[in-house]
Amino acid sequence: MSRPRSPWAWATWRWPVVLALLTGIGLASGLFSDGGFGDALAGACLAAPAAAGLWFGWLRR
Image (cartoon, rainbow, N blue to C red; front, top):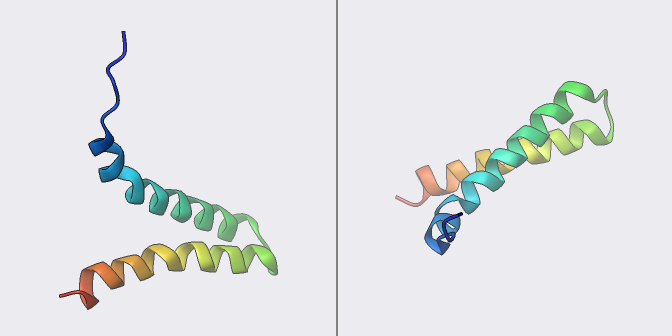
């Protein structure tokens, strides 16, 4: 029997999971691409977690 899922858990882990997926996509794209769209995708996916960390960690003091 499974436990009912708590909306609190989803609200807590939603953005860390999204940022982790973006980081993984960006790292894989940067590793396996050779110019063009892959490098742009890697840059955008890796810039999003960096921008979120900058925004919530440093700029919102």
